[in-house]
Length: 421
Ligand code: CTP
Image (cartoon, rainbow, N blue to C red; front, side, top):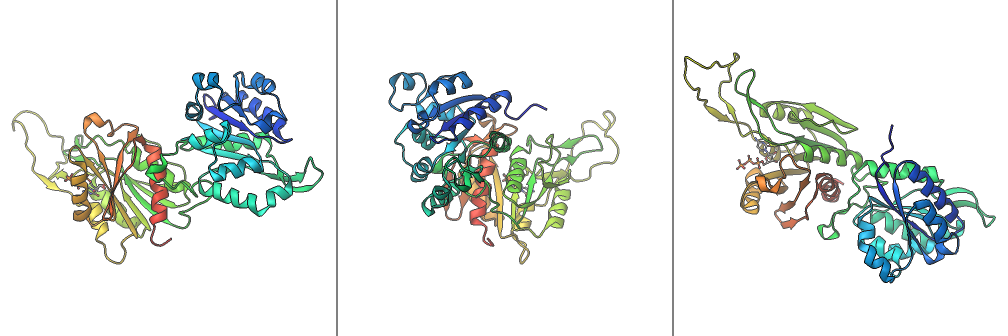
């Protein structure tokens, strides 16, 4: 089976330390699996491995100097970090972790780490006392809260003769951690979008919570072979289910007909019609958080026949439509059993915010995620989405992101809002 690393671009930031030689092996392991590796070597790193040895393994030049005009002309520090799928800091020394935690940008490594829009994995390596020092532990806690993932350090005998935690994780352990991170969304939305990804990595902010999600279109039969539907692909709802499961929630995904694989670790209830969706949602309650991402058909044919409608004698058929139950409004108003947080979507083709505010009030939910689904936006059926979070407190507009990034950021946000948490 090909590794998820195949075709991926890893930016490896190598700090100084006796473990830097293992970084060379890491490069080899990553390239064996089909990843392209680009390396930044800190000043301290250069004292342990030479740029030449790193560059002969990466097959690329090694980046060392923030103010090198040639480097900046070829690839500036911004592109360097954005061009990668993942940033890996190995070995991450106590000094490098401290500078990262402070948000310093005093060399190419830290400037790149500060400018990145990708996830960061750090593999610490240092003397056991340095690792256990409260200052380092404080920096690590800060970085974890900022969304940095960690692999290691391992426990064992150290180059300095002491014993304890501080050894760089083995290259294959780091490879496994990289693969796990690449299997999920790797993009971090802009901080201005305030996506608190904190805790999504390595922790489970929704552990013990039940998250109920509707997704996809509904199909409303006209006769046994024809139906009314819409262009919803279900991608946003499925991405939300996957992100909620990664955040540790028990997830029930009530889905209309879609061509997507159910996300791992999610209970899928497949339905066709709006009425079946309502029934499945009610059966799945209680929930702590309910997210209604489905594009439910507003109407159904009043008396869908049990026989295929034939052309001919009766002329062109006409159908009486009746309104479907509003699932979101029903759950939003459901008295004591109401989920602590009810989130709706508003799919609009014009006056997005006006309609969204109106829906928030009409449906009685806590938050509306509004998006423009006019054909020019490419949102319906597409991979990207630009959403506005509309709550009684105001509107927050997020940048254009892929649907997985929207889902990750949204689940992280809901975890912070969850009233029961
Ligand atoms: N929704 C629902 N049940 C329905 C219709 C909509 O649960 N019968 C939910 C959707 O899942 C979404 C929100 O209500 O979270 C808004 O859906 P939308 O289609 O944008 O709005 P409508 O209620 O259909 O209103 P309008 O026709 O005015 O756009």
